[in-house]
Amino acid sequence: MKQTTYSNQQRHWAAAYDVIVIGFGAAGATTARFAADNGARVLLTDAAPEGHEGGNTRYAGQVVLTGYDFDKMKRYFKQLFDSIKIDEKILDTYIRGLVSIPDYFKRYLEVENPVSYNKVHRDPDFEEFANGLSPEYPEFEGSETVDLTTVHDGYFDASLWKALRHQVTKRLDQIDVWLASPAKHLIQDPATGAIVGVQIQRHGHLVNIKANNGVVMAVGGFENNNDDIQNFIGVPKLKVIGTLYNKGDGLKMAQEVGAKLWHMKSYEGFGFNTGFTFENPAEARGKFILSPWPDLSNGSIFVAADDGSRYVREDENGRHGHAFEHGSWKNPTVYTSPLDL
Image 1 (cartoon, rainbow, N blue to C red):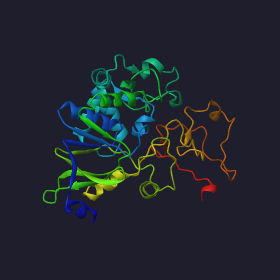
Image 2: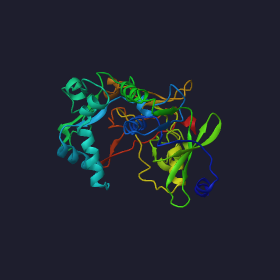
Image 3: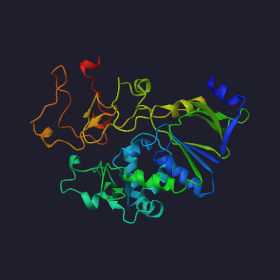
């Protein structure tokens, strides 16, 4: 088994760091900067080449969920989870983070005036979800405290990612950044099972890097791995609109050392409609409609598949890619063109 191979191999350490962070997205950038601030020598490694690092944070809308009342936000989130069990302490920690986002931006990202989405962009007809983003579920108790925060008045411009990356580049005396360097395996101590290092593919070679105080996995998902998509989600394929470097490597590394998986069948389609990400043969990433076409909901346009059948409900509004079906919000149907079969 790979777990045995990478635990008991005769190891030669090419380098040693206090902390190794796998993945240079928002989570990885944040982990690396705070580890450095606490005196650690950090290696931050990512599979993407220079100019493509950042994971999906680089391509996302650059908005961060915020709340202004802890108790109301907690009630709101419990309704989102519905019958799914969630640890109370984990939920409390998460909600405390959400209600402190504006202060966090000021204190840690050097953003003087964080922007409230609701105060700047709230539409008079906001209860119609197609006209707004926050809250996505206004019918839930506590929704009046839900907001979004941005680093400035702008979207889809990588502004949040740039602010996070800046905090890493300010600390390059303590953080080494390796790009185009995918982590391949976690290395365990054969006696204790503790993770003591990472095997990384660097300049065409596999190198073992020691972690004196731990490894943080801030890897992305598996949306660029078609086998994982079919195994976990049960659809033929999904078209990626974000990073091209989330290939499920973190899942494999975690499973090798005995990790269990949880809730692997849920995914996020693009949130305004439930079926409009278009294949673009000229580029690897898909194309999507940034905001709903007004004519889609008044009968002026029908979207047809290659066989002439109606492709999707044009008037159906999604909530972060989820569609309402039989009493709950679920992943939307993934449609396959006859030409894909």
